[in-house]
Image (cartoon, rainbow, N blue to C red; front, side, top):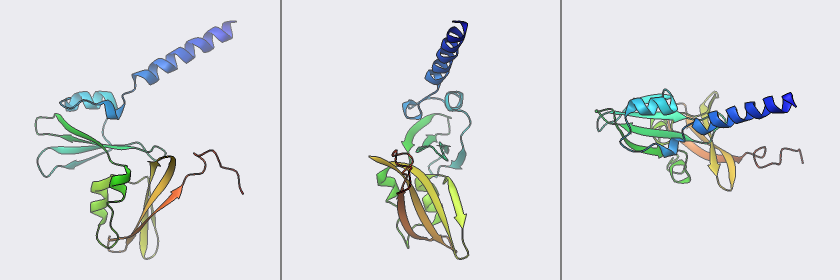
Length: 163
């Protein structure tokens, strides 16, 4: 009986901790940068915003399917919040046109970078409803996108058994 009671307390504490975790998409505009850090922790990456202030990225990889970008103005206030790994943004990568820097601007940091002799491949896990998949961008040695592709993540879809 004591074991069940202890398990119940541990489970209640875990649920309480998880309920206290902030949902990145629920961060309100006009939140201060200090409040953002308090709710989500330090950003994964920061970069200057050409219009002033900074962009703060929160990358939920390598196994997560979200990267959130917050625009922080010069007064250290959140002005926008965007989920970067969406269908629309993924397919803004144009082979032969988009550079590595452009892809970082569109999608944020990849979960994995693989380098080959003459090219590199960057990948992100993304919610490609109704499935989860791996979005891949291949780059030439000079940093220009060569192509994009998607590999569906069978282990998430419940079919991890071999054929």
